[in-house]
Length: 426
Image 1 (cartoon, one colour):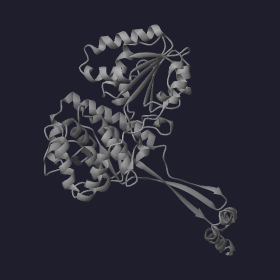
Image 2: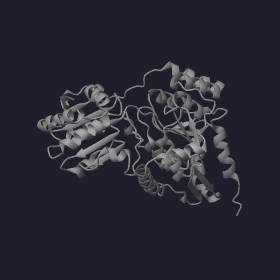
Image 3: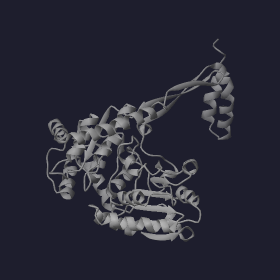
Image 4: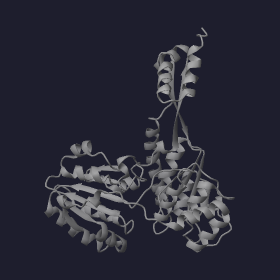
């Protein structure tokens, strides 16, 4: 990892990274939109080198995958699912229907409805992610989504990795299709003969999947546009260098574009972390990818005062922030922009990825400035209602009439005036 001082940071460090233009993505989407299953199968054969007439995964295959797992694996999935469910239920309690009288005779309200149909994209390449199934499906189910469809590339012996199928079984998902990439996103957005269209697509993917989600947005909702995963660690001399090195490597092993950053006020401590990185990397099974990521994107930023790290973090708005300093409460209060915040030496970011109950589908590339991570809220619609009696119309009608006239919308003004001119039916 390279070391740089705070005042030497370039402007580009804090800038949004635009998605790479991938012309093939639009072509694939249009083909799927036009030709349906045949296009999906064509691109699956082209990119995944698999030919299959049957896109849907059968019930017996799903159940078989679940029963093939070891007892400890099932226990881990169930424990994680339980924590996600508990956390999500608590979130859901904060979103309720209401109606209140905002002015005499004017009753404004909110109704909260679940989205009807949701599609979950789950990567299945180098690292199959059953945890992603849990993170996406459980909030959708708690929200009340009726129809959940799962797609994942058939990269495991011509089908979906069994751990993904097992997680789907645990979540009660029966609509599962062995298709990935751009063609999967297009199928979910527009529907094919086999794959039903959905109302919203969630879940992470590579740059092609991300570009596809961006292009179909509007025809269908999406969670957000996610870039490479990010971790920013804030640490002073009291932190544990071994823990921090391990956390930086856990982030770096995702892929060569992953971003791992350490901010500290102690250059000696920074050197300890570098020594630990080298030591741990030497026997890490994923060192080939992690070493590229650390070398290409890893950086240690030296600040004069550890509180300067707050400014860096709030401007960078990273996906994950770990804080390992004396003044934990101060940092927790003043850090504002992040996908998820991990406080203290034992709150490893990896726990957020898996078993803590938090959701690991989080905003990247500075998106945390304006949005949070995936939650039950992403599967709910907030729709407003209005009831007005004659006395309420007298309260707010004249203002509406005046505003309509100010804007030159005489039809709007007339709609209100006709009602104002009517006598009170009482």
